[in-house]
Length: 68
Image 1 (spheres, rainbow, N blue to C red):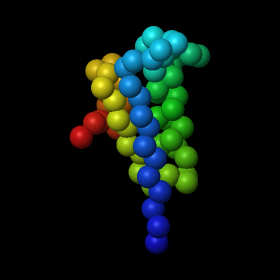
Image 2: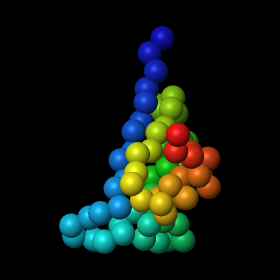
Image 3: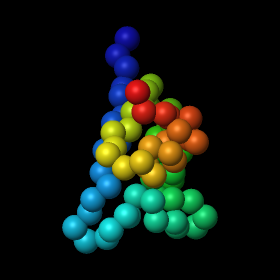
């Protein structure tokens, strides 16, 4: 049986919109929206996040996806 892995890259830097992953939209940060969708999507067996940003790591932990 095959398994599907979702990898979410979320770096701290952005050339156009600084801090875009932690910006709030409709009450949640953009990375929180992404993580919640990926975790709820039935097509993904596992969701991993890769980041160099402490704030993104904190949000991932609160969403139940702490960094290894």
